[in-house]
Image (cartoon, rainbow, N blue to C red):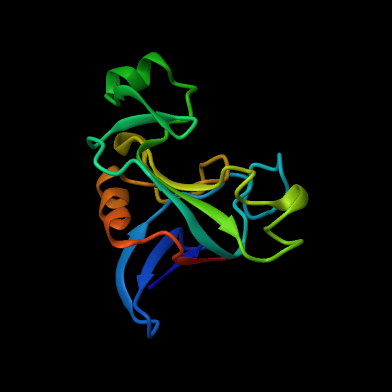
Length: 159
């Protein structure tokens, strides 16, 4: 199994071992476009793996901060009360780069940049580049994907 994320189309595909698409989802990647450097707020390209899966069993809309549940459940009212908060909801697939000098180690390390595939408020979701570098998904979509994807799954991010 493999994930392929296409930045131009803001899409994520779950592929079987033969490369055939099993599922497709809309995503939102970085407003700043593609890039690998720490502090760029860009989505890194290249080959990654799912290093960690966080949030198994949490209720839909659970708020995570520092990869830990806060005990809050996201609501539109909570979103209006804290409009500048970068909401990480429901599940996290934490990515680690596989290409030293490009998306692994040093100032370009995707894992040290905390690059995730994660849930985001559904009412604010748009299939457009709006994130701070992560790959955002609707909550039901990230829960579905999370349940299908084990740690170690290869993730290819294409510009």
